[in-house]
Image (cartoon, rainbow over all chains, first blue to last red; front, side, top):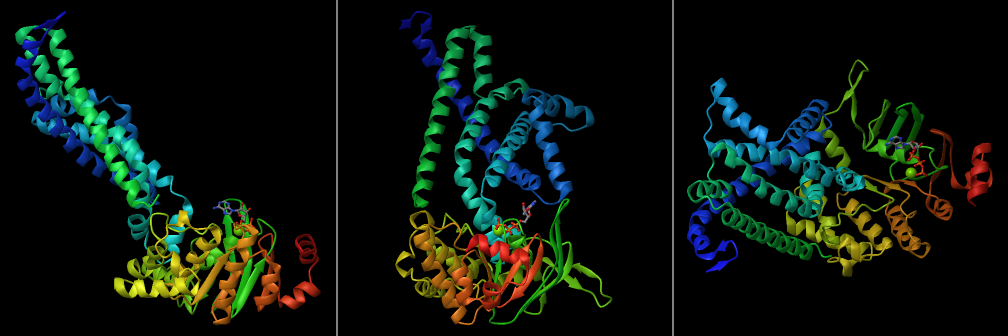
Length: 223
Length: 251
Ligand SMILES: Nc1ncnc2c1ncn2[C@@H]1O[C@H](COP(=O)(O)OP(=O)(O)OP(=O)(O)O)[C@@H](O)[C@H]1O
Ligand SMILES: [Mg+2]
């Protein structure tokens, strides 16, 4: 069956191979989100710290990482580091690059979220005798993370799409699976449209998951 | 109960508190009045070290606030732990209530005892329920702050502060953010506390309240205490021309 330039049977034939790549893409995304969120929370707390050294270090991190294209960072990690004796596997370099980069953006989101909480909340918590850490954990972060969810969702989706960049460091995920198929069959139109549709399905599903989570939180909030 | 000696505080070039000294006895109610920007809130916040002071010395219930005096007279920063313990014994009520919006009224009141005092949940709950009943809100225990009126929120905030069983209560314009018809219910709760013998420092513009409840009224202007006397004195024969001017504007 054929629709213009699109050969449906051909596409059905390459789907299993693309799905394998898509699974790797999902795995990379989930790992980058988990590590990136840890890095992001850590860096955000550094940036708002009353210790100057920490806040400068945190600011330096987000400045550098957000100012250099992810592609360049991946090249440094995978092709640069071996020259100083550090050889990373494609997978390790991919997860590391995505987490470090995602972490910088997530840090900014978390910092903005924490700082959007009215100052009086921290003061009320401190006046009860809470330590800074207790106030963060019990009062500030629970309020912040409700506000964080929408921008975090956007960042997670951006991260999922950014995983396609790691195809350049020989990581066989969805994008590279498409490239490999194309070197064999040379049918770029059908192959890359299919790759695009698979990404679209994944990002759509992701958006749906996040909206579910937002609804759940809204209910537990009494609002 | 509270002793503040020559407290000074600046924000950058702005000298907000100038040699402020104040003593409050156990069970006394001291009302602080004064024009906007005179440093009333700042002084109150210094009393529990929400605002670190530049120099001077404050003790509450015999405990130094924020800075300890060494035997040789030098002042050094006190440990964080001591500061937290001290704050837990000083209740503070804010103009804008500052209830925790993600918690119910009951959870707000339980938060301090559970997180800070680490008492068992059942005990914290019993204490919180009793306090909500005391401020007339037993039936609102499960309500979130957004579902409460301003006056109700402020009463929950008072209950939250009382839950730590404080030695001293500080109020910073507790009724200024309220619609006029809600002021009374909050003042009633504060009056009850005065009757129970709670030591309190109250910043307010409610002169009727000051007249009725205060043991002493303190007038602050431009970072200094200009007058510290009985309500009767200050309202009938204010000693300082600035006090007279301020009172004539506000009464
Ligand atoms: N965190 C801050 N940083 C800089 N300046 C501040 C800060 N807090 C207060 N000030 C300034 O210090 C002065 C005293 O403020 P404060 O809030 O203590 O006055 P107040 O007597 O409570 O006034 P009001 O009746 O309006 O509440 C004001 O000029 C204010 O602008
Ligand atoms: Mg004030």
